[in-house]
Length: 356
Image (cartoon, rainbow, N blue to C red):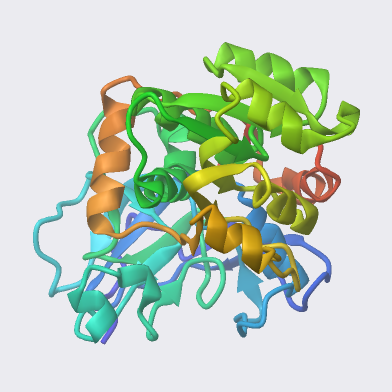
């Protein structure tokens, strides 16, 4: 059962939508959806643009995507309506739309707090319309609680990029003082990972390319920047940068590069952990069994976080430990942002203002 919209909410809205993979990204007027009994209706003010949005548009992954689709899953806004079964929320609350829009809450994975691994998960901007629109629905249980008065443009990337890298760092299970190498260090995820890693007491090697990205890395407090485009052999460079102990204690692979993943296996320290986050289309992770066993390294995957990870990641932001590096553009600029993202030209995170 869906709820009737209050008269103060318009019947139509602006949204960026595509009808087929790699098809035209259209800015057009669509209907505002009424929330179901368990849902919030959020007036989305800003939405981050994630590399996963590009993958969804292209159809890169073997998971079926809703079509036509409104992309986006880093939406920050204000609750304007809610279903009859919703508890603990009120009109005017600040709320976030995440990648994980809802899950069943009753399967084995949900019971173990592995909510992103739920087989019945509903994904914003993938299996349901997301945050590249002015009004979007979200399950009231999974919607992110944003403190009142928060800068909604700045916090929007935390809702995916921040939660994702925070969860990945937790998965690496490092100790303060350890070295973490971040591949794709100055993109949307990487620029957040640098800050979370430093706030958690780690030393950071950033791997990326270009003077603008090196400048951002230094501004965010990173320790050693390595430009892979200028490197003759990245492996000994990482080993040297991390004190010569055989490499990094932890590696976060955030870039959409199969080569970066396979190189990282070689500069991971004995008993270290490699965390796979970025998902290049059709990629494989290759590790020589001898070195893998002798070095006792671990290779693990990490998706987005659960509700507790969300709360903790947002708390880092609220305490001033994280400041997303953003560039704000209008909703109509999504096609241009996708093009720059596909070419590896994005520094930090692009955020779209749904009102422009």
